[in-house]
Length: 337
Image (cartoon, rainbow, N blue to C red; front, side, top):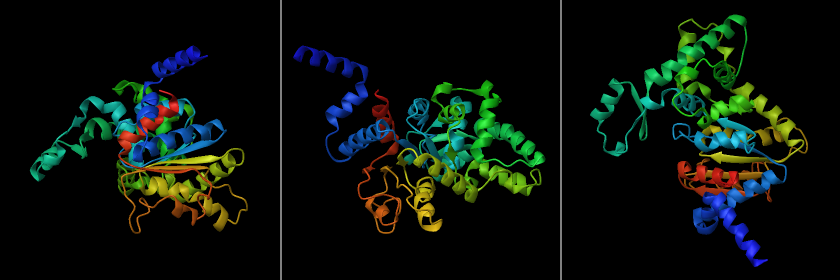
């Protein structure tokens, strides 16, 4: 019996080195919170639950798609709420990766250095510069055709639905510069993943759309559907999904990507007066916003109990660390890597 157990352990270790490393070494503090949150994520799915993931910050520019795309393909993620920046920047990277420039010593850049980057149309996100022409304008030219076609036909779609159309049409395929399997938006489009993008207007493509509306090329500003309709769509999705399975909430960062969707539960219960709305069945937040006065991004999960979002028995985790380090590790453990 001992021999069999030993062989099984060796096979498990060789098959899932990252998971085994986490189990062995992540025992205390934020490391333990990471392990506990990942294990609870797996337990939630194994019990038949669904997982709702939110993306704030610049996780797409950080190439989270390397792990998130596989999470989507393996049905470990059932819906996503993200900022407009995360929606578009994964596609920017997909079509222009070789033109990106890394700035490992970005802290040493002078204002003159920053101006020089602007003069070359290189937009910096921490240590990474996104090329305007090869990334932003390349995608703009393609998606503008979808916007104007829909505008002429009186059609209205959400921001991600336009992007899904572009990705499914192969209009960008000739420019792919990374393995398409590493693009989470492409994986989402292929699986028709429910996606919610509040506040899309403050993204690059959101600015571009507004500019074309101001310039008269697009006549109906509602060609791209906005935030209230997004909340309504989320409410319908949550009601339909939570009717048959518990829905967990996995939050990467803070901001609107997390604040917007978590409110759907009290909205349905307290504002629409629907009885017995299930609370979120799992909660985890990865954040570098430490607990502070009045900061919702830094609020501990218990505060959400008072707003009717989480229950006293909801599994709750906060990992105060860098999401670019933590999220891929949790995803790896959920995937059994």
